[in-house]
Image 1 (cartoon, rainbow, N blue to C red):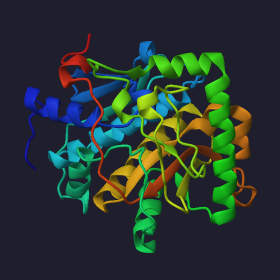
Image 2: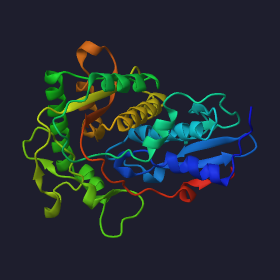
Image 3: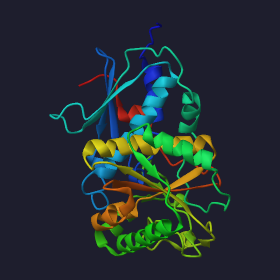
Image 4: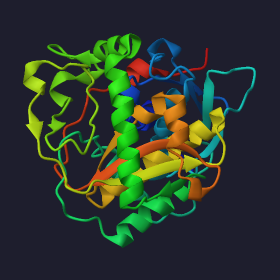
Length: 328
């Protein structure tokens, strides 16, 4: 079995892939440390980039970091490793969300791994209208399988349940734009002019649905005039609901892995996605989002799927800004 070098070039590729993951408000709440003696890359949370009004429990922070871990794992397999991921490996270090051991080469290339790696660089959240072209059932099946591979469940609700979830999202959006703490925090994450490598660029806010069917997030909460343009969104939105059996920090991290695996698989098949997170920010609305017929599952994310433009990337921190080459 060949020996792989965990050198500076490999580290940059791994971390660059990790930071391409989605995060709440593009907060990028992660940092990486390498322990070269045991070939372990530590993935740590950065509490300073928390969004406490929208995410008081840190659930969305865990999901964000989990998505970065999935990208890191995909990149490691692309480079030839058989990565071993451990979630929350040390109770004495609550900010150590995951470790990825990179001391063994993979004997085979897993099917589809190269396509997922290519999708890491093309995946973007889309806040613009989708077309009315339906997503084929076989593609939807692949998304369900991708979620299951990470210990999560992806549900595809029917019309009535979709309408109910969109009503809940509309109520959550009304609360977000009228609650002072939520409104202020959301506005503070919108960037204009010289855009720093985190936060939401003003040009990426997207329009609102002229028909009122899709309550798209208004990050600016009474956005500037240039972002008030209405648009006609898809007539029948396609939603997917990502759930877990439990609601612990480890489940939140697994949600991030499952979410990103779904998003990358969607990208491979040219399906676009945007995340409707508003309901998740209000505990009672999040509880209501659970469909009674699915059992006592915990809803973690609503995903809007469809066909449309690929979109443009949001800024990302450079690998050197989030990586300590050696453990301190």
